[in-house]
Structures are given as C-alpha cells and as structure tokens.
Amino acid sequence: GENVEQHPSTLSVQEGDSAVIKCTYSDSASNYFPWYKQELGKRPQLIIDIRSNVGEKKDQRIAVTLNKTAKHFSLHITETQPEDSAVYFCAASPGGTGKLIFGQGTTLQVKP
Amino acid sequence: SQTIHQWPATLVQPVGSPLSLECTVEGTSNPNLYWYRQAAGRGLQLLFYSVGIGQISSEVPQNLSASRPQDRQFILSSKKLLLSDSGFYLCAWRPQDLAFFGQGTRLTVV
Image 1 (cartoon, each protein chain N blue to C red):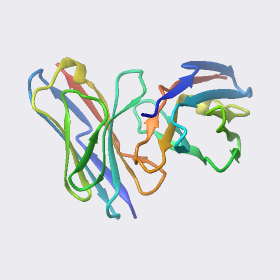
Image 2 (image 1 turned 135 degrees about the vertical axis):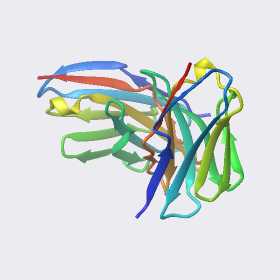
Image 3 (image 1 turned 30 degrees about the vertical axis):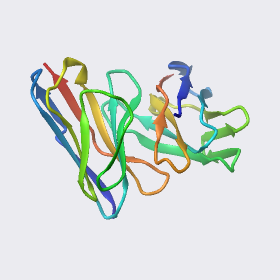
C-alpha cells in the first residue's frame, strides 16, 4: 500500500525567510497530493493541493511542486510569518482506492 | 451546505471500558468517510475508511472497529479500551478529492 515519508520533522525559520517541506510517496498510482495545516488542538485544514497532471501550483505565498518520476512533492512557503507556525502534513491518494495517506507531519516554527 | 459533526470533543475512559465515537455528515450523499488517529506529537494514522454503507476497510489491525449503519454515519468502537488507545481521533469525509475533518475527539484512557 501507499507510504508517505515527510521531512523534516521540525523546521525553525526567521520571519521573512522561506520554508520548504518535502514528501515522498511509494505508490505510483497516487494522483492527488494535498497539504494540510494543523494548529494546536485544532482539526487539519487544507491549504493547497496538486493533482498528478500538474507540476506546480501556487497560491500567494504558498506553492507546491510535484515530481512524478521521482515520486516526491514539496511545499514552499515564502515570506514566512509567525502565524504560519503550525504542523504541516502532506498526503497522497492512490487513484480508485478512496484512501488518503498522510505523512508524519512537520512542526514549523517561525521566529519573529 | 455540507458539514461534518463529530462527538464528543473530549472523553476520559478507564482501561477496559467500551468506546463509541460518532461522526455524521450533512448535505451530501454516499460520501467517503474516514477515521484517523493522531497520537501526541505524531502524524495522522488512517484507521478505517468506508466508500459506502456496510463497506469498511481496515488499515491497521488493532483494538478498534468501525461501522457505517447509515449513509452519512460512521462509528468508531472498541469493546475494551487500552492505554495505547489514547489520542486525538478525527473523522473525515471526501466529497471528491478534498478531505474535510471533524473537530476531533481527544480520548484519554486512564
């Protein structure tokens, strides 16, 4: 079955710097890759997603890139702000299965 | 509009007691439904998912079971809780690709 590995587990950056979180997946049938942000004690919220027919997607300060050949995808946050501090999860969904498998999460701390 | 309800928000249960967590979705039909568990400081582990009434797929063998008695209702159960069952349980539904989560249930087994 699908396995998603996420790195790093913790990431600390200065306000205004960029942050990059990377994920790899194992199932070549995966065709949907969302990213979620979870604030302390809250439910995860979708921040951006990408489908396998697209290589890159951007939404203001957030971008996601996908390399299907290498089976990895990354989240890029530019001009980080303290309110970006949270746990970020990547996920992969093998087409036709209904499954959505998450990575282990990255705790991002943005220092003012 | 479509909403997901999960309850209770917090629960403290003794070891060996039963468990029943309920999740319901409004405003849609035949949704894909999921139960995830998040241990303290850990990732989201997929426990069960269901693509229709009576169709339950288990991802991890353990002390839990799931049932879907109605189209928009998904229940997580245990006959006898273990200390290791403590965690943050999240129900989710997917209308298509996107997944929306319930508020979560923080379960502490004592």
